[in-house]
Image (cartoon, rainbow, N blue to C red):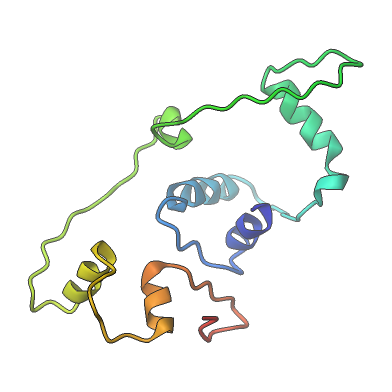
Length: 140
């Protein structure tokens, strides 16, 4: 959702998704290239010009007067960030049974395992809780 991305880039929300983190980092790097940046959400119905430019940039030419919708569906095996030559860093850690991370990791691997955790704690572990600067309590 474009509003979520804008709020993450403005710092109002945190980017908690591991899948989106590389895109967020790239966007932040690009923003740092400019002295002054203003980001605002433009509703879809007011964004006709931007959509037209995106169509032209994609190389998709729809002849004038043709009211046919072209839909291309493809499955990507790798995120588009890899097409730009960027890599995503991952790390592997060894966790022993005495480590406090161990029960959390076990639960994330197999949710049938019984754990004594609050719903708020569980949602935080799963990355679903988004805090704003004004709101610091759990929304779950």
